[in-house]
Length: 130
Image (cartoon, rainbow, N blue to C red; front, side, top):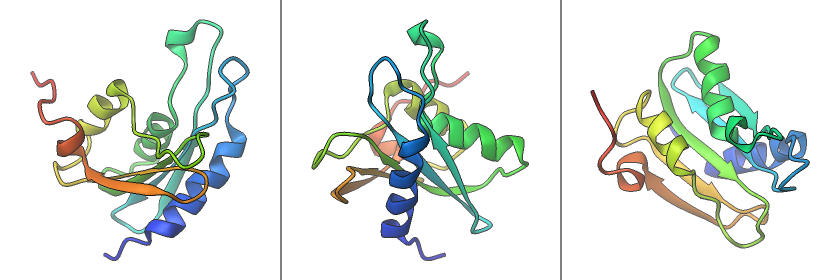
């Protein structure tokens, strides 16, 4: 399957507008490309008790999994910092490794379209396993 990186970034950037971030004001959107060609979107959702907030990519994965989707190809993540691509946090890296192959593509992007492509194994070479 061909990955339309620019389209995924565009969708993630648009999803950023839905973020609930009254504390940090840092909006993040994610667009998760599933193997069936569908795209599931997510935005960050903060909470006054900071540790119970949820990142955009975990929202997208959770939505997809709850809809029965189990095979994923790529995710685009767009944060609020211009010209600086947004990488997933450590918790999201570990979360994603539960559901993807080592060559899963993570597209870290900025609102203006700057982006970096890395595989999940590059971002988290030593994932936690039981």
